[in-house]
Structure formats: structure tokens, C-alpha cells
Image (tube, one colour):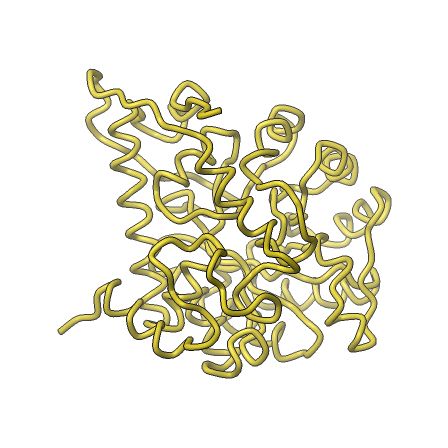
Length: 342
């Protein structure tokens, strides 16, 4: 019998024993591990706040309308996507998943699964070269349909990795600036640091690829990204894994989108578990949404097929939510469909 999302999740639950419970509601409350692992840093508050911030928004049902067909397509970084849902960068199989799959298996599942679904995935970086190598190899195998994420290393080192992204045919390149304080990098003797607008501008000028800055949580940083010439930002608190007691991304997204949404592409991640969550993030100002933990579970339980199936299920759920809120295409989605619950 073909695998279903239910059977894929059940297999992942067995394989991830002691790392992740594969809870019916993935909200960070029962994570058996923090970092490394699948949980949040410290108390886990930043992880939980992502889910809570999304839950604080309610959706207005509208069923008397003429939006009978839903078009989820969009163009992003020169690529036609089937829907506005991308794979987030998840890496560190040896540490976070205790070697229960290889780094290459994890990267290929995300990148090839997303490509088969008609979307894109980001890939990761870390203190060992294996992480970047696995991501670049997967992107090359997918004909360039992927986006490598580079740690905020010293500028010369970033430029070298950008060149490798270009060679792999990547459609864009990202820097997860929210990794500026990652202990695993500094313990390995590798520099990570905050970046100035001048540094961003210098890096953006070194490549024809769109430069994405991931880990923007304030209007001030969003404006600095614009000043530095970045093509896009990802509103993200690193899945609650960089700094404890941060707000959820859905809480800060509206003010960031209002400040810079007409100047730069605004993406977002954090706590997205359903197509309704995707709809909420789009209504709050995001152009597209990144999903991490649900795809990681699908990758462990079903490889690229699992990732493809999970993305397509989220897209189907989004289409239903759009129909029930009078949205025919992504341009129809806006604040009018939401209501605050506080």
C-alpha cells in the first residue's frame, strides 16, 4: 500500500523516539529535548510563542461570494511555484536527529520533495562542512531548485560559499543572521557575527543571486535589510532556537510588513502547522511561508515522498481555507479575513 501521511508520521514517531514525540499538536510543550534536538532553546518560550501568536488570530468565514476557484500560484525569485509554501532550512542530522538519518538524506528529502511538489526548499549550514555539502548537492540534483542558507560567518567565507551556491545553480542565497550567537559555531572555532547595512550591501553586490536575510524580528532590522540591498527577508526567530523569550513571528509580522513590504519580499516562518496557518501569515503581510518541523517529521518518516505529500496537504488545506474566506487567488488574501481574539 502507498504510504499515507498518517503512516509516515507513525514511522517518524518510532525513528525519532527520545527526540520528538510527533505530537498531534506540535507546540513545543512536550518536546523531550531542546537544542540540540527538535525543541526550543532554554525554556522553549520562543517556540511556544510562535504557535500561540498564530492561534491568537481568528479567521472570518465568508461563503456568499463568486470566488469558486482557487489559484495558489505565484512567482518567487524568478521561479513559478505551485503554492506559497516553502521548506525551511533544517539541518544537523547527526546532532539534532542523533544520526537516525544522514545529512544527505535529510537535505535531499527537503529539496527534492519540495521540487516535486512544485515549490522550493532552503538548506542549512553549520560547524561541519557536511551540512553545506549535503544542501548544495541536493540543490544541484534538483536542477537548482533550492536556496542554501549560510551562517553569518566572516564576509570572505560567505562570499566563498555564495560562489558554490552559484555553481550549484541555486535560485537565491540566504544568510540566517539570527545565528549570530550560535554556540555550536563558536565552540567549533568558527566566527559568526551580526552584520551591518554596509556588510549586507557588500555581500549583495558580490552575486547576481537574490540575497535573503533570515531572522528579522524588528522593523529596525527590516529597514537595515532594505538599506543593504537585500532582495528578501524572512521574519523568523529561528524556530525558537536562537534566543529565549522572543515574541512569536505572527505577532511582529504585521508591523514589519507595513514598514517594508512595498520595498522588499517579506517571507515568514514559525509555528505553521496547517493551511489555515499559512492563510493567516499571508493575511498578515507575508508573500510566502516557510515550514520546518512538519516537513522534518515527514522527511524522517517518508523521505522526499513524505515532504512532497506534506507540502501538498498544506496546499490543499490552504485552498479550502481560501474558498471559505472568499479568496480566489493570493491577491485576495488580506487583513479583512482576520479577527483578533484578544
